[in-house]
Image (cartoon, rainbow, N blue to C red; front, side):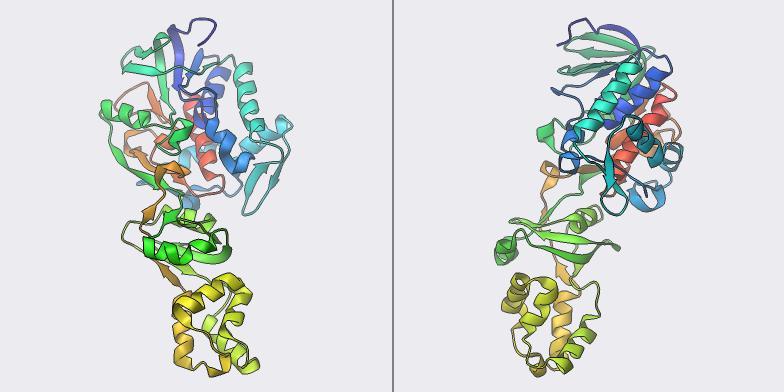
Length: 398
């Protein structure tokens, strides 16, 4: 608990001390508002700390709404993202002397640790006079003028209330449905939620066939729902992961397949015919192994393709090989769910919110920002950019 009481009146109360909530607090505090941020967890920014393998992929320089975000309304996020761009946050990172690097595809990571980003946010909060408290649970809420928030540290009253509690993803980090429950209590529409940026699982028979390939990574072009990603897949003990599968999971629906092109650089049929002419004694397994790794090539040959010298492969046999690899059609049994999902797809319906301010159209003075809103980014720093941008938008007006 805090050393001094937090009960009483505040200009702004923000529930959730993650990326979006802290950004909103910084901007509101810089405008001279009395701001309180409360979080039930034992420390702030827990998802920030774990992100990017502990190095925090804090934004993406290519973060544009038309290409990298999902929402029932694909235009909603344009206003916020255009007013707070990746370069705004990069400037803040540079101002704090935090070393960073571009890994690939515009993804920016801390050189040292995710702790640098959390420290940046807390230092900015302190400079703006923002009060941040943890170990504080909200037990009740009554919207009005003022809004009243019951907590286990006393009752709060405020002019502006910001919900920045995230989604269901990674419950062991303290994630909950608080934001969605609050929206429902206020009578707001909510788009259906599900785990996204998440590994997929395979049915038992398929899993047993492939489980000993766990740890093998392959370059692919992976497609779900008509949307494709040129990234690696990773075999796991439960199914498939890796950047391509995580990206595709946001577009995958139960009962649908993933189409995984295991030879994205080749017209495989033409390649096999060329190798047949030049190396007729080479085995199919060795030919495929140059791209797939020996282990994967051996497994495909054992399960589906057989193995024989290329010179003995007729055109029909080559077509059969191509059909098993380009694409490899995978029928997931499901996903690993919120336990390992990086984000929650769906959330508070954007029709309920003002795109310039994140304020509820029907409940004045209440704002929803970050992951709790029906805006979901692709892998690679885009969800952090939405957190910064939506937090900034709300912080400018609360």
